[in-house]
Image (tube, rainbow, N blue to C red):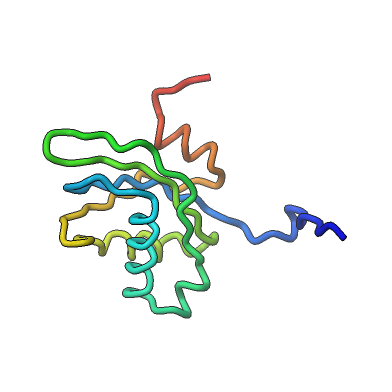
Length: 125
């Protein structure tokens, strides 16, 4: 028996945060996932973090500028909880004994619009 996909009217609404991470060394997707979860757990605890369910959707290639690396990615969370995720991400200052800065580029309702508006703004149809 094949399971059916929930119709969009029954799914929980999601928001997508476009963020930029500046670090001293290149980061992989697993590093970003653990950094996000640790920050959310540290600031809000397990019960609150489980409510807004942060998830790293996609990361873009690392760009090296001077002595730092810029990584852009999209993080999914529940609608109405995006400010809590932003607060947790802004509390990140170190990861694995290296300095890290996290900037929120914007919030969107779809992955496509987050990518077009914030990740690759110069790319046109």
